[in-house]
Length: 168
Image 1 (cartoon, one colour):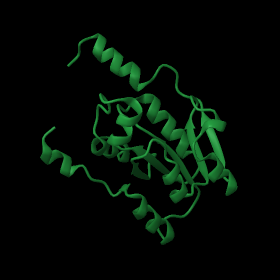
Image 2: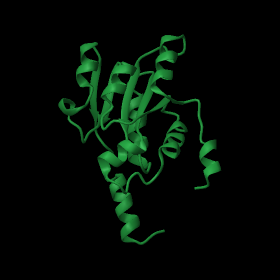
Image 3: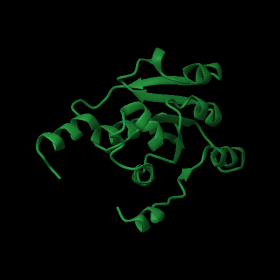
Image 4: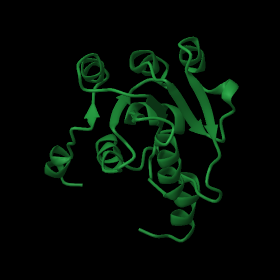
């Protein structure tokens, strides 16, 4: 990717955690806040479906996006395939997403503490008991949901298909 393109990948939906706190404390955010998170390395139909259903749980959908550093820590040195700026820009283009906020840690616990969502959503590959931040949300009277995944879609399967078919 040319370096000049990366500087153009901006959206008012992409915020730092501190910027979100300022928007929330101002008159900018009203309604039930839903939070979800992930790497979203290669966006596919399963992601879009889950994000649309997450949005249905409230008024504002905040997506915590693993930074490149975080993805490498979790998935290994060959990931992410797509840079955090590009992933954020694509995700911010989805109608279901209101805000995208990066986090560098392996889990979004610190970000969830700052966002203080009313609803915390993860995909069905996570049990509610294992969802990071559950205690923070439930202590405030919020809801934690594990939504079923659209079968047959995963970033790993997309990467495997490309690799096995020598697609460049």
